[in-house]
Length: 497
Image 1 (tube, one colour):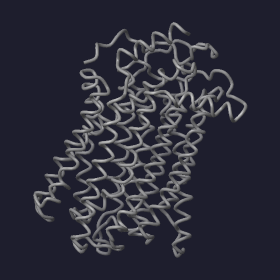
Image 2 (image 1 turned 90 degrees about the vertical axis):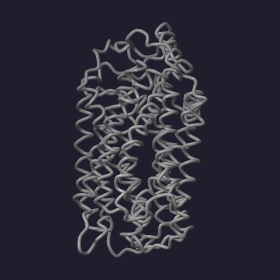
Image 3 (image 1 turned 30 degrees about the horizontal axis):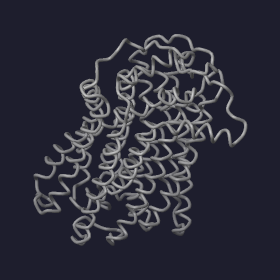
Image 4 (image 1 turned 45 degrees about the vertical axis):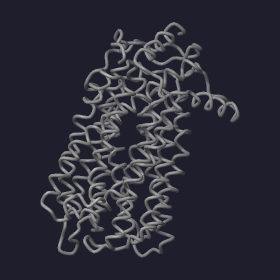
């Protein structure tokens, strides 16, 4: 058990390295609830994009557009890897950016319109093109979406470590961020099922209606534009109190790379980077397969799938508070480990029981309430664990600063983003390969897929969950930062400054 929190540091002077190469920032006024909410609101854009990519993109381009699953997986992976390479550049540039709008806000404002236009384009592919041309279209548009989201998301994520340095307040502000990402993703997915992908006479399975995806893409694009602008404007008044860039960035590539290596070699950060690697692979693979399982493995209707989003919303509402409670009692590391392990156990249960022939058959009236209960239990646990993992990453900012003399929030968060995107791309690729390996048919219909194929898909899904999230949890055991060590780091930095 970690000791209780020390004095309130919400007014501590913002981010300057011990080297003293940046002028001190003004003492910031207390961070109000309105600023926290508006800061978190911007993550709706990431949530909408992330849910769209994980829940719909593979199914849309495979079953609706008609690209082979393996080719879709390769296209999405290429787009993710290309985009991931842009992330460290955005982080490094924003760390050293000097303007009257500070380090982060110029990028946040600049991303709004390109994000919206590219996301709408992604769900309106050209008709009549050959598979190779469609795959190229998917690579280009998916890369544009992810790169423009990164232009907003990385500076915005880095802003969390500047807005709050206190051990507990940092968890709170990141809780708002995760809450809105979760709510935005779920809300837009709910609209997709209930409004844009409703079953019709021509498409009894509404999630196979091509026109619905075009309407979904437009609504999502408008939402992303609005929330990005609102979040950037809502935190605009905090610019004078944010950390200022220190010394000019190195002029040579070799020195730039050496500086980046020194920053990214921080041990606590490397541990969270490794944990994020396992999590991203699992998220990419499982996220892409989830709709296949729900549609073909359990044969749930569109109406039931939309209802499952309601208990999922409990995660966004209760998860951040749950994270704060468990963190206060056990510390971030142990709370995150316990919460994530519990969530994965609940998520695995239905597929495992079905694989062992211990689960109600498809069409049973017991299925909807079982999945509603399982989702209502797993969602808050999963979201709370995610909040704490993000807060643990934010706590590495000061640990790195103590070693290097530089505040590098942008670089640190971009490196996490780089790994997550690159390996989640591998996860999507593996999901396409898994579908090809089990010989999952194109233009499949619920209830008409070979049971042997479905059984293989279920066991593959379970294996991915256990290996990926088990690895993420195991790595977290080595994370060294506690409440006491974080407060000690803040004191040492204050003296050095």
